[in-house]
Length: 118
Image (tube, rainbow, N blue to C red; front, side, top):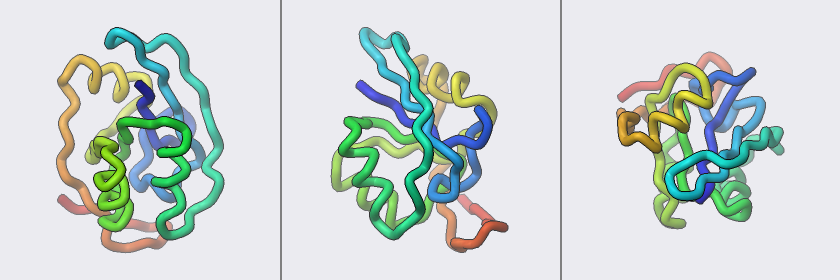
């Protein structure tokens, strides 16, 4: 299984589409066995969910995310966790422990000064 965490400098980003990169964690037997940082190829409507799906991602973790992206991820069977904060390693580890739950934070503004609400 692969978990993607939208990040800026090793920290979970507030808005997934505007992140610098995605930390991709390869998981086997509920243990992270490898991680890779992949630069964000660009924010275009509908592109990033398909891009991450093509990489084999099964879980996406972010601070917030637009409703359209959430819908696409859910259509593809990818679990969406929003409202995460802190380091990407902690977010992925807490998800695996079952202690990271989605707050349902949805971003309504697609500008660099986003206000993400629950």
